[in-house]
Image 1 (spheres, rainbow, N blue to C red):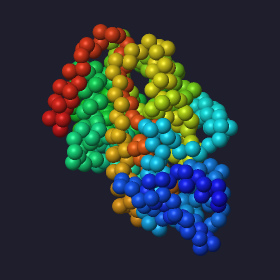
Image 2: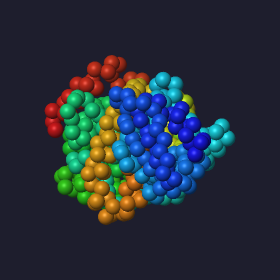
Image 3: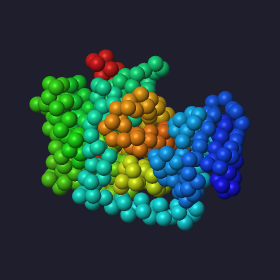
Image 4: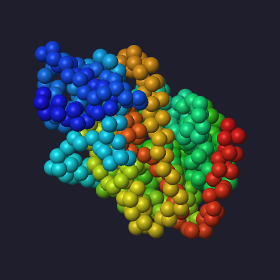
Length: 414
């Protein structure tokens, strides 16, 4: 109790956190401050505090999931926001939750997980994406089912608007020409592939390791009337490269996070192998601001086994080994936080439907995941990178003017 109290005294300076314990005692931390939440939590079991001290993120998550940590004022989004906002990464802070030994162990586990052989990769993807399309329909945008960072280019946008804008933003960076072949690595439910087939004169191959996604992507392509120009396949990108297929353009949105740190060099080697000499690639990925890190225990256990969020430095370093030229880099700093808040809001609104699909513990786990991710983008070290690569320095215009021009054309053709 005393150790946790000291942690909270240091960690909650602005905003208010009240902690009620099973013995009836209540402690109050922090002072009211504009922009910082006021939260009251209650521990229903004294073991919850030991869980949190052992591993703050995993322990807090499991205590919340098991009903040992109950929010009486505010919600899990507010609690995590309060803790993160008091230790902003931008100002040199971070939530101090691990000893040096635990950090070393986490990095070692991350590296081992990152070996990510083909059979393991499919199982890891299934853990998150094959839990049923019904869940994702409840909180993703209805138009494109994009499970990745949207692009909030103006105020007052809906999630549907922002995801449409994201697709246009990426399509513009691909600098597509009629008749080209495009590969979509990690195609999800087909949103990107269908968008490109509808708005440009190209053929698209979408690949995924999720059987649930594959089936729905094919259905959606038929419904959109573009199935004749899209081929979806359940195949690992490594196996596709081994078959010798080549493409004029490669796009990968929200997939690189699943590759694993140890596979970065292999990923870019295979992408370079599949690109034509004048080929262009657009990589859209969650990233770390600052240097390489490790995957936390909660994410590794419950959300993305085998996953790893890359730093920009290690991403570009891996691409340099195969002479892929990083022709453009954009950091979408706050766009994912806006996206996650919308997903969280829709999940809360659909609480009954989610618990009917799974159970209350799953709902708490899912909202903890979304809330933690939101705080990481608002106050932590997470961001989203879009990196454009080319095989040939002459493959693209020498100024960026073509990007907003083409983006505007895509948006006008909506």
